Length: 386
Image (cartoon, rainbow, N blue to C red):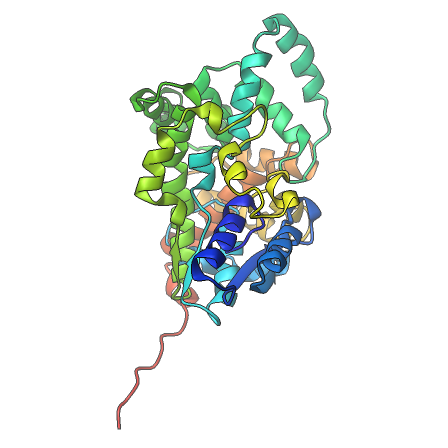
């Protein structure tokens, strides 16, 4: 599964070295939106190594066709925007292979997320007087126009200045969260049932305190390895590949490798503002420099923009008062408010709207109508022997 990022690219090059040949297949995802598209780097690595490369273009129309079918394969409410692209990649790969290698885990053990760099910036940022941070910098940042590009400066800046005011584990939670606590209170019908404020970020804080690492960054990596990796990424990989009878293997989660890297001080993993320093150094000369030192993109879909065009009709149906009331969970007034804000480009609510859309569709096919079986692939006919 060659995304063009350093993790999967490194696995590709090392697999060729271990095998002693390049007679294997690589598969990548492409988008028409350049800010989401890493395919040119995947192609660069495939040519550099010499693999049999396949590119899968993900379009809004393909996504519409898979909603809500992919939810039946993942079998629970799910909001990660990389699941459908992974499904489409596996759909192509099944014609060529039975096992796929995936780069999941590299960010969690080598320190590859933007939130890890934000932690370092936070330490410098908080040296600025609080009155300047909140009355000057934050107000200027809030004036930035909304952008639907992948992890735009506007999106990251607005998240950063608010999260930087919190303690270390809670800031890490804030930079990762999809919906603020106030937003949850607005969109839930009976928010008091969920005890929102008393549990906000509790998982992150507890994991941070439980970890015995001596430095803060390694504790943050422990949080990601404890929650994001197993409860999101591994679920996506396993179920989207098994939907096509494929196995996904994740070499970066090797026990010995994880234990070894957990013992290494964080300053070897992040140098200055460069994440994954150790991994990049070890792959110097193995991968092309443009791949080693490119900006991290990550696999996600441009649904913020699609909600304004190709996915708008599906969203309007899902976010109707009738559909929202049928769940018994959401306050239709609150959901409709963030839907209006998104359509007017006042705020980019793409991530939370994608989660809401997926939950409402899941509820409809499993609870309201119970017709999830209609989305299953036709069972194969049993072979009869002569």
